[in-house]
Each structure stands twice: as structure tokens, then as C-alpha cells.
Length: 246
Image 1 (cartoon, one colour):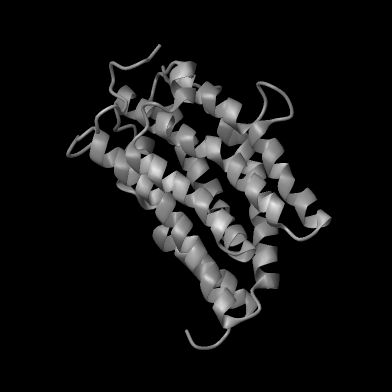
Image 2 (cartoon, helix red, strand yellow; image 1 turned 90 degrees about the horizontal axis):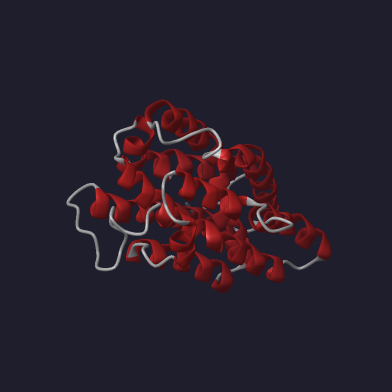
């Protein structure tokens, strides 16, 4: 790419990254949504995904601190309320904990993050470091995976309810809120990126940021697949089916 793209072409390039690299294409998700996983394998997914969920407000707080004006900060801080909630027991993290306990994990064990995979910790921490250390434009662009999440949410909810008798609609309540939160957040981030990517270098950085975020999500599933599907090498100290489950 040697010439700047139009804003429409930039958006199309961003959406193409999602079509090719979003984690809905990962074999682990295909197994999860088709009902091919055992209950302990679903528990491993819920446990490790909690670490990602718990660090999203930290990531968003970093972005809020870096945005240059009050209007932008007011818009972005809604994400903090969405995930942390306005009171105890509210918000996305609390709903994910209900998902984890709903599939049979003990809440204290999940919150401790003691059983998560090294892949999960390294990938998620790398994401937090990315939004801290790179430009604000790149930090905002890395959130654009939210453009692709409604599709995977619909597939996940219908598939898990159809195939796992230990999953109820209440267990998956986290995803109901995300069906309207994610498109709202993605629309704002996309508008910001299209307005602020004012050079070829900016556009290249934006595309690279979204590819990086797709890699973060993919790497987490690589870890789950390797540990809990095949070849089944669970690292020392990581969750096993006999660990702290309810």
C-alpha cells in the first residue's frame, strides 16, 4: 500500500481483517459452538476468558486517561460502567462470573486466576501493554474487533443452549448486554479511527492494531486447544477437571 485510502476503503480493509482473522474461525470455537466439548473443556474456556474480561476495564481506563478532551473521555468511560457496573453485582465482569459458576466453577477460584493458562496471561497482558504504550489512535483501533462480535455472540448463544444441558439462558446473560453495547462502542471507535487516521502511516498503524488484537484473541484459543483438546498438554498449575469446581 503506497497511497492513502479513502475512509470507505479503510473501513473495508478493517472489515476484511475481521473476515480473515477474527477468532470465530478458530477450531476451538467451532468445537464450543457445535457442542463437541466436554463440560471440563467448557469450564476451561470460561475460566481463561474471565482473565480477559477482568482486564478490559483496566484497558479502557488507560484509554480514558489518554484521550485529549472531556467529550471523548465521557464517551469512552461508558465502557467502564458496562464492565465494572455501577454497583456490586452489576456489569459485565459480574455477569461473566455468573457464567463461570453456572458451568460449575467456584467463584473464588475463578477470581483468583490461579488456574489460567500462560498463553492467556501473556496474550491479555500484551493487550493492556499495547494500549498503554502505543498511540491513542492505535489503542482505539485495537478495540475494533467489536465490529465482528455480534455474529459470534449469536452463534455462541444458540449453539451452547442447543448442545449443553448444563447451560441455561441465565448462564449466558453476559452476551445479551453485549449485543447492543458492542455495536455502539464499535461505531464510535470506527468513526474516531476514520477521522483521525490522516496519513498513510496512520492507516497502516490502524490496520496493524486490529490485526494485533485479532492475534491476542486467537492466541488465547490456541492455548486452550493445545491444553484441553490436542495434544492435551496442560501446563503445571493450570486448571484440571478435578480442580476447584462446584
